[in-house]
Length: 397
Image 1: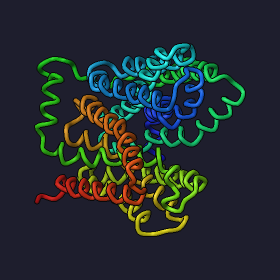
Image 2: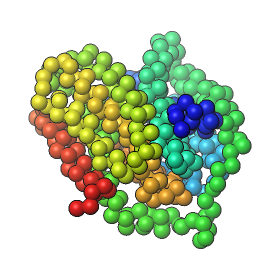
Image 3: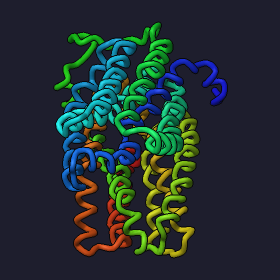
Image 4: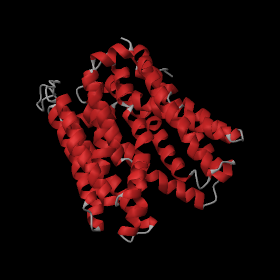
């Protein structure tokens, strides 16, 4: 089935999924970073204190995510999606009335959990379970909400902050969630009759048995490094690459403009990878996941010039776009769709832990005298090792 025919036939569920990935932006670092200067002034915090709060909020969400994520396997989708949307609404309301740092911390936990974690999880788990032959296309289309949010929301929020207090801005966000996001979701999903796995011995294993099955499968350990490497290094590199860009001969303006190449490549690779997954399977394609990222790192290491920033960012965007489609499809192929929510939430939690550690490691390396080039070389070496390990899914050696 072509993309256009597939979208026409499945526009209801695809719109549902894109809505979730788009609104997940309100819990993502790229958008929350716009409010950081206001948080520091309003709550009399320094960068270190806020960074600690943010990391603790992220880790708290990561701890809860496996438990809450598995319930998408056990309750009707229309019920589960409303709970997630309500969590995002509560987060925005708490942020708009946060007059104490403790309330700010609670709001950050809800934003990171409901926004970064459960919103994307709901969209991807739904696509992976509902669709079989067209799973790749469904996942690639649903993931479009991420780059769309990255492309348009920062400018809108920055404009709003010029004229509105930051708390008022969060009040407007809460209004958008309450009066646009939630009603649209309900209209799309109220008649959904997707089969739910019942929590009994005949139709579903217990959570402990599911986890045991996951970690007793040797394929799990062939996939984890390759899954974690892109978000781990990208989080740390993107956080510090502007301040360390002089090492590469880049300017802050060049790095900022290179994000256009990053977003465009992420969208293109996500859409292109969907039909490939449907045709060849996620397991067959998984070993090439890190190839664009390794090429981007190699370009940055061995070549010079402004063009290398665009090539580096574009190639990394290709890997992230491919990954957003590939992961959920891979979980469905390896572990089946009955416990897709359990599997996906578990790996999402592990990923969040890794991205929480990355900024600390990158900061320590830069403070210890590592250049950006040397960090790129370490990233390339770990990516190559992870890619070779992932080949065990395809090659038997």
